Length: 195
Ligand code: ZN
Image 1: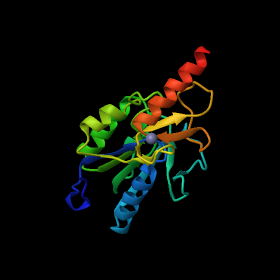
Image 2: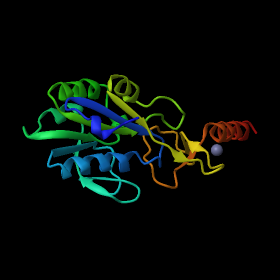
Image 3: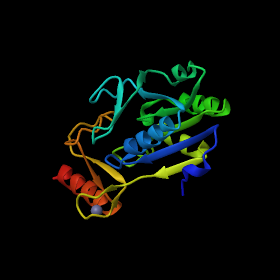
Image 4: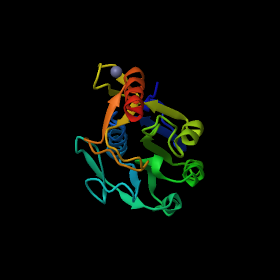
């Protein structure tokens, strides 16, 4: 279990789960605690995430911290020298080079905290997240609650007809489902498509 009392510098932490699982809330919580400890933080997110605000990492319950939108992970390497903690939100949308960039930052002695979706709406590992989870010192899976049965939810089930992978989590586009309810929903959609 993740324990902040064991935090060292020069490490990578991953917070991952489905939509509505509280990933961003947990990222913001850790960053704010670092700030309380007078550690300088820097927060990044991909430019693709244009929800709510360009300059802020904002969770669904509207807690926010100011962030820098970037296109390429390499932009994170030009940090001010006194930054001690780097937060990254929506990391699933970055290219594979984010893995090397996070290694470089951690090797420099920084604490790197990454939040992202572990799987896409098809249930497949999302972008660089599997590799980030593999190299991290600590991985925390957070869960939403299944809207159908109340189990812990692991899946982001897409409600819209769009098949584009990069559709962001507006509340009316996705619902969190557990494994069983997700499988049932996909099966019903496949049946409906055949009819
Ligand atoms: Zn369920």
